[in-house]
Each structure stands twice: as C-alpha cells, then as structure tokens.
Image 1 (tube, rainbow, N blue to C red):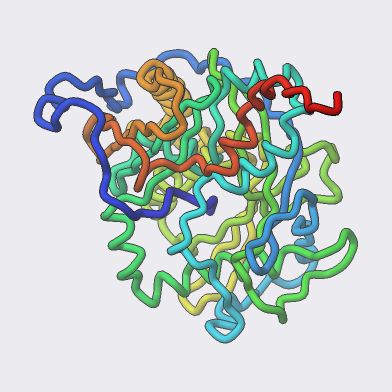
Image 2: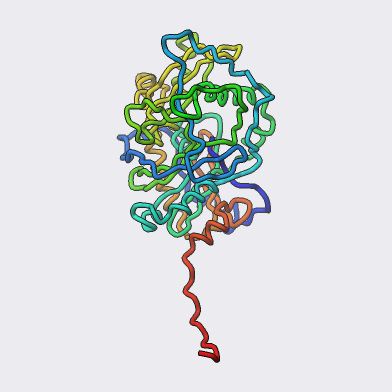
Length: 397
C-alpha cells in the first residue's frame, strides 16, 4: 500500500542512443527462477531507525501518532463474525491515487534524520533507498505471471533511489476498477478497524470512518548481500503483548482472504497469496501475519496466524511452489544490476527499469519529466552549501 511512482506530465527526453539502437546494446536481467536457486543470500536482520505518520489529510508528521494496537477478539468466545461491508461506501474515504507521491514522505524523514544515521553520510552514499512495497515486487518477480512493473532509479550523492512508476496497464486497470474490487479493498481496511485499537488496552471501534490516507510507517535499515538498504513500509499495528516490545518484532500484518474449502484452493492460496504475504513481512522483519477468512456474504468467520518464518513450509514440497532463496537472490541480482547500470550521479537523470512477466528486466534512460522523482526541495537541502564568496571590505572597515 505504499505510495508509488511519479506524476506523469511533460514529454520524455531520451538521453541515450536512439531507441532501435538502445534495444540491441542495452543490458538486461533475466528473471527465470532456475537462475536464482542458489543458497539463501546474507540478509541482515532489519533494525528500525524511526517512524512517521500520515494523517487523515495525508499530511506528514514525524511521530507515531497513527500507530494502532493489535486487539483481537477473545479466543474463547464465539467466532469473530465481523461484517466487512459495514459502512461501505458511506464511511469510506479512499486515498486519491491520482496523486503520485513517489518517495516524498520517506525523503522528508531522511532529511530530518540524516545527521543521526550511524555511519553518517558515507553510509548513505552506498545505500539503496526505497519503499518496502517496491522491494516486495522485486522479490516476487521470478514467480509473478500477471502484472509487470516499472522502477525509476536515480543516483544522487552516491545513494541509489528507487521509485515505482505506474505502468500504463496498471493505470488502465485502476481507472477501470470494477465496483466489486473497490469493495474488496474496503473490506481489507475494515478488517483492520475490527482488529485494532487506538490505545493499548482499549477496544477496537469499528463505527468510525475508514480513511486510507492515514498511515503509520516504519523506517528500517538492513543489508542484502553487499547492498546497504534504507526502506520504509506501512505497518498495520503493534502487539502490546508481543514477546519483545522492540520494533519490528512487535509488529503485526493483517490480511483478509476468502474462505477455502478444498485442498486445491489451499494449494493456490499457498502458491500465490502466501508468497506475497511472506515477501511483504520478511523484508521488514514482521514476525506474524494474522489472516481473517471471509465468507461470500463478507463476514469474517475465522482467524489464522501465519508466522512469517514458517510460510515456506506450506510449499516446500510443491514442485509449482516458490522458494525464498530464489526471491532474495533475484532481488540481490537486481540491486547489483541497478548499481552497475546507474553510474552517473545526477538527480535529474533517470534509468527506467521495466519488466513484463516471462521476460527480462530492460532499461531505458530519461532526463527530467515525467520520470524524474527526486524533488527540488530534497536535492537542494541535501546539497552541501557552496563556500561563501570572500566579503568585500566596506569603506567603513
């Protein structure tokens, strides 16, 4: 659910060779799972550097005001019986997805805290900065068969920034979204409302508005192979009764899915949905996903907890399943590919990495609009001031 992409506007300007020549010489990255089946790469346990909140008007606050607290129904009572359609569409305020936020909120946090990063500016100079959601897409790429993606990359002061661009196909899908899909999205957010309280020890209040502008985001630091990472992702809630109160191990991810009635349905669920849940929660180190299973009438009938580190067990013996090593090795390979491709340090220069299912990742080069995504306010604030010119003595001196 992270913000994505950049606002599309002016015509693009190619700074590379003509397109016909570019395709014959440009590097590309294959995505077949078999190529990435080696041992699991080194992945440093993510540590939380800080957090920020977005309010009901999508305004940034550098604090935890939007954090909610996990408050599930008692296990010894009747089933949950949550009505996920309640309040739709009257009490629903979805975020305006025409507003392309890019990395802006994360960059604002980074600007406020750049002096406090352990290792200082030199650490940041070698790092990759992005949203967790963009990395989730990279992890699942070797197994994705439906939706392609585009990632814009720019290097600035040594740091590689990655920001998703909405593909034309994704935009067309979003604009033609059927009412049923809109309602299903609402139901996912409504489930969170039934499972979370505003304060520790208090009870959820599902009578209010579902406003998807509101978000609590964790900012994390990690390393994949030799790639230092700084990324941010939205967090559904924190568990006040978790064994450790240290983020991110106290965080909980909440999901909904339709009820399953046959082994074949469960197999499909483990192969496809669980892969995305695993990728999304493994990256930030969130230990558990709590799923609510809904019936055709839109009521949650049962809850099930999926520990992130045990999800792979459901597909370990499935020849059409997924493998965490393949996901992480591909992500590491992509980061190496991006680091070696984007060599010029220029916030206005964009390498656009594009991928469609069953194909390789390809690259095109652009300058300025519509793909440039590092805002002027960020570039100027992060650029060290030039030395002031010597003062001219005044006649009075």
